[in-house]
Length: 357
Image (tube, rainbow, N blue to C red):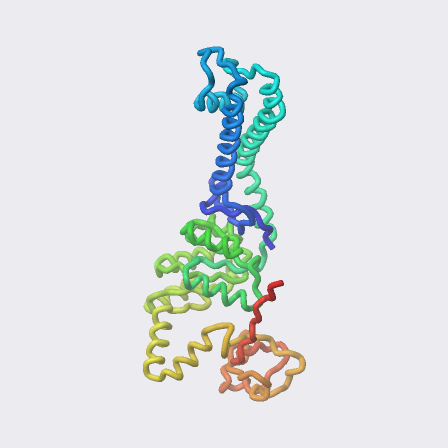
């Protein structure tokens, strides 16, 4: 969806509003600036060396002394910057030829580098504003992940194993390092406070299909959920909280699903302690990409009318019909119909590593 542009480790602002940071395809702005400074310094040192090696062919009209290394550096500096005081000049035919053939191209290259860097800096924000506007126009039915910590990254990894692509996912985080990491992983990202309505608007939350909130603090999660729900009444909102006492408040704020991270980890640890094999199975189900996995899919035409227990290769846990969840032991879940969705346990598909040519 969104086109690729220049990523940065700091947020960019155009007229006081946050802009999307898209995955980088080349050097960062800081590295590019350092590279150009080193290139300019290299040109200056090269010119200094040329003048110093041919120092006998130059005359210093101010002091009438032979040129030294400092004098060569001084001449190179005023020549490259086109200042040209005229106190040091080439006096022999060979030195003037060298100036015409070597020094002049070096001077031109330095000026092009200087002007190019200046123009790019001046035009950078305008170009980013255009990229930001173009990106926003293409975002529809995407997923917004607020918080790019361990939980957020695991959620995105699970999404990418399904039908999502990196172009469908937008990250929001208050930490510039997390935003930089998201860019490195090929994701568009915003840096800023997710409780800001303006920032959420810039991320096109109003057009998002789902929003995943993993901010690490329950009070921030509640405020973020309220703000998201005000902007989008249709999106499926999933929120991670630490304290189970805050679950009712999060649901009242508009969350469709609430995951209590501490309780989930505690239950898994308890199961692994009481029954190691049961804990191993639960961990296997929660780990995507290997062993067993839980999957939700649409019933195919070939499966219409089949008993849930007769679907080959999968164990049906629940049937979703008319937006109503029916567990496998509840009435109506024994036979599947076209248009139903089913939640199954199946063997995780083997993901083959790409071949290296």
